Image (tube, rainbow, N blue to C red):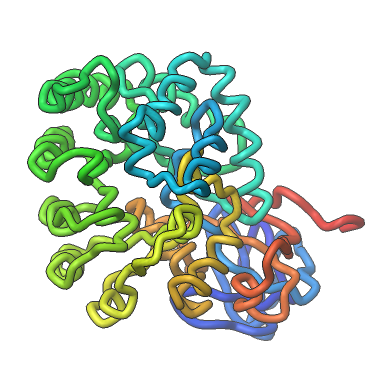
Length: 405
């Protein structure tokens, strides 16, 4: 007689990796999925608390694998300036952009940063997000970067979400290092990264490889320091121009290359060979009114995994809805709903190095899943401004119940 902690019945499963199972059941023990399949095949005499899913569709918990969600300040003035003709690069070179958020973030206390960030995170959780990546990169000093990363850790302690932290010290050049980019890279590699890693604040290392960011040679130094500490790497690559960043991060066995509007065929080949995930960020594409599409068909042809994320940040993607990101991925980038949903689950998990833990409904994986009041999984990509999330289960524990449930 199988002993389960809990069993969900009368559900339809979108497993992501093994197709759909209608009229199904799913069983949990010790926070892990231990059985799933057709309800008629549920082992007889099994014990455990039983939950009637009332015909809901169940997907893995959504994963937002690229965010800058911890920040202070507001950049609606830059949004207005772009509408009046200013470019992203012009705003950045005039002292706006990332440096504007740097000033506000440095001035905020840790408690103020946390208070500003929690509503943004809660908005994601309300739509079924159970795993979240949080980058630093708005402090750009050891003290301020540590503050941001500690706040990210606090989010994971205070809210029911798994948080993975990414050190993005090579995001922009702070004002005190103006004209001394190589000196700042030295600071990142020899002082900031070792100290933050020693404190246990860093799960991965990122950089911004761009004409207004850091050169490939400078990024290579950051990646070398990261790998020397045993930390995986990822990269903001080919967003505004082709700097061959995708090939660079692939050479270091990187988890992901993100943005990729200017990705070359050579970059695609490198990513495919390295198993590097392509993280597409339709919110930034939409918000910046970009016109150059990432080479989705080339990524498909090379079997490069495609992930989707919000890129939540104050300047180029103030987006706190994974469901809207799914819709944008389909409408703007022409992904199919099945590709978009895989991009917000199993491929997003791979972009964080968590594919053995989460991202699909499989025996042995963490019991992070969502019950949706929808007719078919494609509905999650179809409706705009509608949240059909009925209930979220994280590590086997139901976090919310429908009214009267």
